[in-house]
Image (cartoon, rainbow, N blue to C red):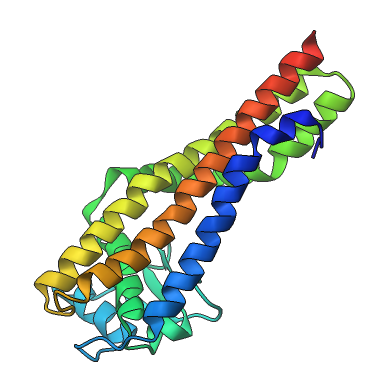
Length: 226
């Protein structure tokens, strides 16, 4: 959209996003090859950690794809990709514990997670409508449409911003639970942390891209209004 000189504002963030994707895939692939000392699968670790937190009602299911792992608060289900669900690697149990961390957040009423959930409908619409509305307003010099597009984009950016503490907190919970439960040795902890840190970088990159795009849209609107 709008391949003009202002696109250079977004390039650094785009490069960061590309690096983050490379980093998470390469780090996950590396530690996917290292079997954990505990020898448990990601599904087994997830189930045990959920039970330890009294979350017997939360299900653990396999889902297709790679790096598709997530917690669904609507159905109270931890969904793990095949490499994580069946895997016994350091990467597998690290990711599984991270998703359990989200389930614990949900059960404990972790405020940022609740805020993110409430923002999701607006952010979902915003991410779809922001650019089309802004583009129509820009092309036809309709300032109101540009402004509405910008506000939709701000809502989407807000969702991404609140995602950061949610993800960081889930990773901290995961590492603490894996250490205290004896699922990882001292030598394995930095490896699991590397996997979760690489995943967190993708969220940081997403915020950087969205923020730089917002600055660009604001600049384009100011130029059009002159």
